[in-house]
Amino acid sequence: MSDEKDAAAEAPKSNKMLMMIVALAMVLLGGGGVGAFFMLRGDSASAAEEKPVKGAVVAIENPLTVNLAEGHYLKFGFALQMTEKAGEEEVDTNEALNLAIEQYTGRTVAELSTQAGRDKIKADLLEKIEKAYEKDDEQMVMDLYYTSFVTQ
Image 1 (tube, rainbow, N blue to C red):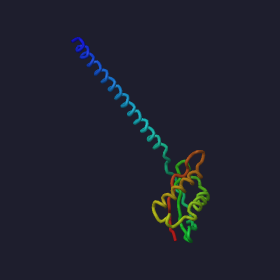
Image 2: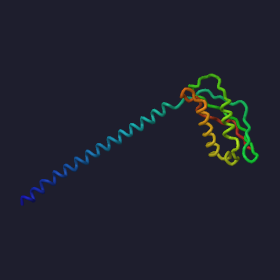
Image 3: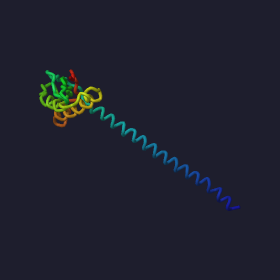
Image 4: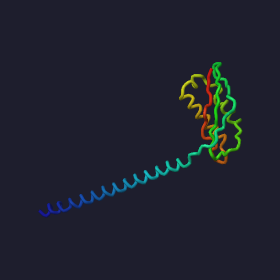
């Protein structure tokens, strides 16, 4: 009979201990989740702060004509969206023109006839231009706009 009383007395102690362990685990996991939320939110807030501010738009005066594959050609014009940090000084666009010629020469009309194809090639060109016009680790060009785009 005394064995039954001991077993009955130990059962509530083990239940209390189990509940304490579960509660502690929930507090730790919840705290970790809240901490991760604020850390990730802080990263997105700092990324939004780093987004460059639009400055002047530098238009390329004359459209380019480049040879495409299979005897076709592309005539297109574009403009550079500068950042505010680039200032108002005149921009030498010769390097951008050279990069554009290299990017589009030899492409197929099929690549350029779809929106996805144009967007991919444009994104690659923008990346090259951004690197070329970077000054003291500061981004000077932030976008590229087509002003004309004709394939033949």
